[in-house]
Amino acid sequence: MQEIGYDDDVDLELCQAIEKITGEKIADGDVDDVFDVILMWWRSDDDDLIDGLVDAQVTLKEGGVVWLLTPKANRPGHISPAEISEAAPTAGMHVTSTVSAAEDWAGFRLVGKKNYS
Image (tube, rainbow, N blue to C red; front, side, top):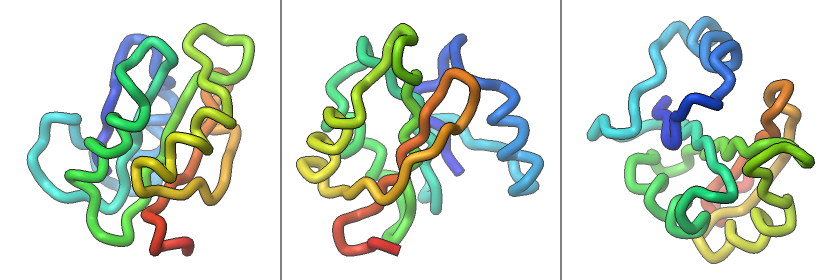
């Protein structure tokens, strides 16, 4: 798993829980490898979401998953689900599910358009 968009506001407990479950450290965004899962922290003041999703797929294995994490509603940096649903297809992806990932973060599971599993 690779992490993109890490900053001071990420949920460290969520990261630690993921590492405990997977038994592996989460790789930094600058690691040049291919990953099954990309954990992408994204806020409204980050760069263009479509560009970010396209860039995230560079290191994503075919059939892999991007978990887009964005601040929940009424929190600084929130991105609306509608904006994510509009950006995903343009980036060649599809939102398959959403979760409350942490106290302040919502998670959106995105896969390539041909991989709806």
